[in-house]
Length: 91
Image (cartoon, rainbow, N blue to C red; front, side, top):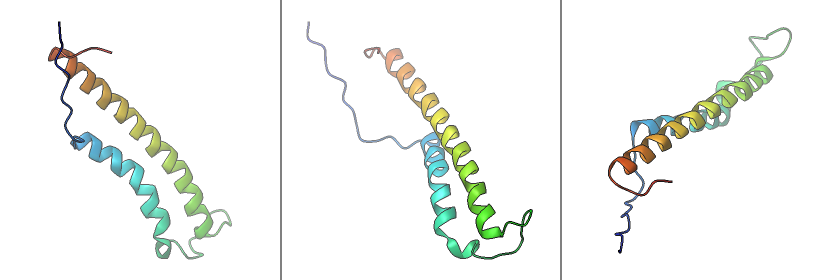
């Protein structure tokens, strides 16, 4: 009659979640480290390095965010599958 509630522990750190964090953290590091790209050369089709480097990171950030999202979905499917295999409630 009475079901025992699932005991949830604190956040679980897995290698997959570390990869997700790195995908989301990398653009911040790249953009906040201004000294690494605060220069004019090498120019790309007449655009100074300072500008095209930042625009390139817009595209890279998009790709990394999509990768992080897909990894998160994979992680959540894995956790849902393992909880139902242990006899937990399914969603």
